[in-house]
Amino acid sequence: MNLLRQRIEQEIRRHGPIPFSRYMELCLYDPELGYYSRSAEQFGRAGDFYTSSDIHAVFGRLLARQFNEMWQALDSPDRIEMVELGSGRGLFAQDALGWAENKFPDFFRALRYVLVESSQGLRARISETLKCHIASGKAELTNCYPREGSACKTSTIVFANEFFDALPVDILSAQGSLRIDAHDGRFVETWAPATPQESALLDLMRSRFDHVSAERILSGPGLVNLYNALCELAGTPAASYSADQITNPGIWNADPHTHEATAMFCAMLGTVAGNLALTLGARGGIYISGGIVPRMSAFFAQSEFRARFEAKGRLSDYVATIPTYLITRQLPVLLGAAALLRHEC
Image (cartoon, rainbow, N blue to C red; front, side, top):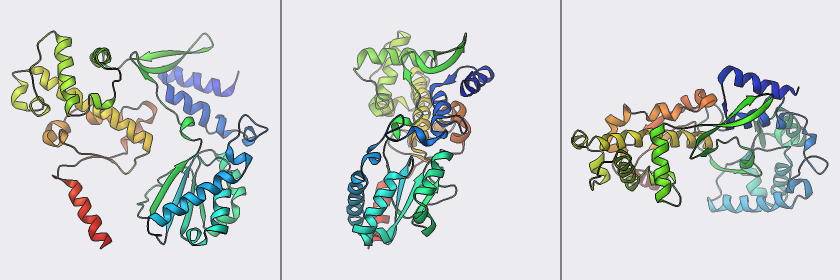
């Protein structure tokens, strides 16, 4: 039997059905047996697939020109960091760095190129392809970004090519969250629903709207949608409340659905914020502002927000290290604008 298959089945036996994102992570990035961790010979014209950099250097050259223009638009800082996510074998970096060195020497002098690649086998290939640039300090190779303990104060451009289509993701539907189970020697798909109440609420909202985005719930009008839907599910008439009234503790005793809507809003915000933190790798923290949450900071601190933020299965330990902040200062955008003006003047 395939060793990776055995490893996946063992994890399912230990923990039960695993999230689709975990299944995808094991298949692609298991340190020993994942697709991108095995021999790098599956890439290129003779392999399973190839990218534009396998065909010609023109793609890297065009992007080098674009990066130079972006550097100039930033007033040509003395140092700029280019961060490439999922660097593969380093072919794009080789083309872009070579063209920048030959055609845009001022930009090249300011440039530091960071290659982010999790595959040990591919990092070995990059080390060989870019050994001169790495030895000179022009390029740096790492398996994660931002780097542990780093506080970036340098102008930075983050980009990726053929990256997000290979990023482990969760699959959600009206049935819940997709899980992978094992039965009779086969992997099978199953669904883990959210709370029954949330599932029923989302079903109701989908019957009303063509598309139910996060903003349909996690916004001022969304909180009103949430309250109205909860009332309809309970078979009680909904009052014509605004978002301010729904989050007002003085109304919660008279209309328990306002308290219920506020609590569910905080919990669902935690789920969405946690997903965002995972997608962006926001290890420096998630900052929450706006017109709703700061007005109920005490209730928010005791809500399910943080528990739902960290409830990411196998990645919960990673998310648990990401801080969350609530901005309570009024008009923080003006403080930021004033700081920017002081810096530039």
